[in-house]
Image 1 (cartoon, rainbow, N blue to C red):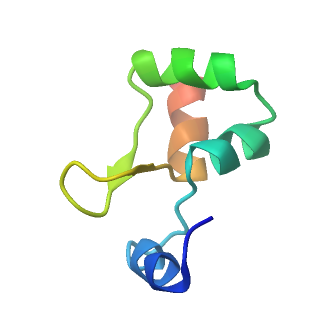
Image 2: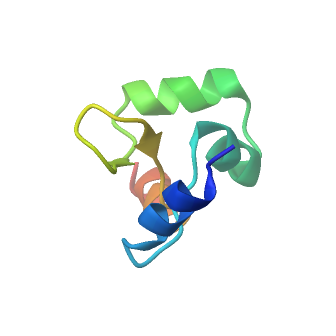
Length: 67
C-alpha cells in the first residue's frame, strides 16, 4: 500500500495514479493480462527515475480503446 507521503506525490500529477494491483482490479483484468498489456506499451508514470510504475486510469482506458 502507498504511504501518505507517496499518495500526496502521486496526486501532484493532477490525477490519482494507481499501482499495478489497483489498476488491474479497477480494469477487472487478471494479473496475467495486465502484464501482457505492459509488454505492449501500456502508458505509465514514475515519480522518481527508475522507481515504481503508476498508472492513470483514463490514460490506460484510452490507450486500450485505441489499440
